[in-house]
Length: 349
Length: 265
Ligand SMILES: Cc1cc2nc3c(=O)[nH]c(=O)nc-3n(C[C@H](O)[C@H](O)[C@H](O)COP(=O)(O)OP(=O)(O)OC[C@H]3O[C@@H](n4cnc5c(N)ncnc54)[C@H](O)[C@@H]3O)c2cc1C
Ligand SMILES: Nc1ncnc2c1ncn2[C@@H]1O[C@H](COP(=O)(O)O)[C@@H](O)[C@H]1O
Image 1 (tube, rainbow over the protein chains, first blue to last red):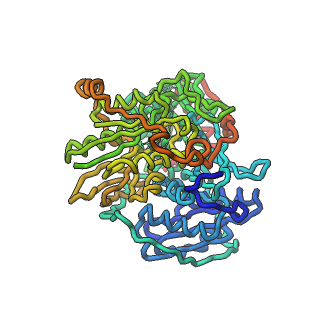
Image 2: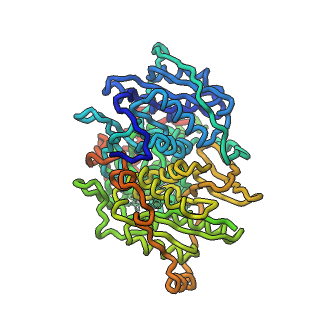
Image 3: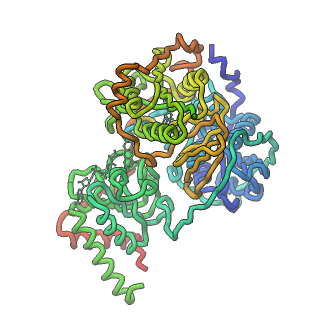
């Protein structure tokens, strides 16, 4: 017996690992979060011995249909329609549902950008299937079931989640959890131009959409160098010191949740499980203790530096280079040395 | 007059939450619980709309009876009535089964607007709102920072990664409130007194709702926990320097230089 609110399905019919891909506002390129998911899907599909499918929907996206293939997809299903020029969760959710209903993928992954997080549960619900939010890895168990893995609550444990009796197995993935695959223009695949029913938006109308003017500032998820401060910074002025260091290194500042809660830095610069995952070449954690939820966000950082007054701070276990000391002495020393080095290089910039 | 329903969750308030590896459910014993802080922001938004346009705020939660303390808190803030949706049959629900029950509860209420928090601190899925919208076939918008009425329509603002957006919603509709945007008001003594006198908390079990046991709780949940493990550590060099600050700074910059990680302007 199963819930009568769930349509009957035949599990055997579901095959392939699908990813929903979205283009940026100008329709110039596919969002990086989608490309990263294609890479992750490729790995899972290889374990399952199946294909990677990409649902590419939007207005004017046909011209981007080769891109998912270059990043690892085998089949691309495009719905390019003027009526999708405006994003509405119920409309886009319906289109993704219709498309996936037709081809029945075993797994369907949606990037957990803010839009994706809004959309993914709606799509899952249309299938009356479950969905795992913010997964960080995927696997196949002894029985051949797909296992989606996510850190619940604490962030120090991983929950393995299986989907019983329903398909697709659905999951959402935050940006920068998986690396962006190499682009390979020699890859070949199929492109299917699809027509599905596109319902008009019901009860909702977009009145305005203004791009956030990205002041010349680089968002932390795109930065090469990040200097992040924690509770131990103690004040807003302390963050100004970090900013000077970040400027010298060509980077940006970020913070732990406690620093955000204290109001020293904005929430969009929070690193960690409930903030953002980042992937800089260099991450400098200053006066951050290294809670599991925080280090969750720096898994893709190439090198991690920790500056902390407490030699037993857990952050040292997650760092390549650690300095035990008071940041109020270490950071000014770094600034001074860097300025000297810059000076020698030819009179500064 | 705006009839609003707000969904709140009673969650363990600690960073050291654990899962029972046998049952795969949260170990709640000994951990103090609170109303999910982001849901207090949802209550706050509802109360502001009520202050502005008049109306009624009904708070619902699906939870074991201990959540009564949380319902009392939001009634103390000024909500009008509360429903505790509680039954052993609802236990172990994933977000599909949770949203199903909440949708069935809301269906029985007279409502214009449903307001949810952005996400819960214990599972942070941000799923339940969109799923309820799907069950009830309602328009919805997440991450709302501001809402107002214009000609019986709700105009809401939100900010995504790269854009500010304004939407107009016909009622009934569902929204979720972006976290860290509103300061929830304090509990008022006069409201607490009212709660004592009027007892505005109702409890709905599945006897009231009469839902098919196959669609709720553990049985109505397609997702299941198969295993819990520790997070594998990303391998790092773990070299540590102790000593004079200037020496330390030198040591670090040399390391970074060697690895080509220093780009000086
Ligand atoms: C569900 C959930 C999600 C969470 N999500 C996140 C998240 O996304 N991001 C996040 O960061 N946290 C998150 N947290 C919170 C996390 O558990 C920690 O509480 C938080 O990361 C700690 O921040 P902190 O390291 O800045 O502060 P603390 O833990 O208080 O550490 C401060 C550190 O500063 C050091 N210090 C003090 N003075 C100095 C000085 N003068 N010089 C050098 N060092 C000094 C101290 O030794 C200490 O190690 C989450 C928690 C939960 C429960
Ligand atoms: N058991 C519940 N009872 C009532 N509302 C809930 C419940 N669980 C989640 N919600 C609402 O749904 C939002 C999103 O929750 P989640 O999907 O768990 O992150 C929360 O902020 C609440 O407003």
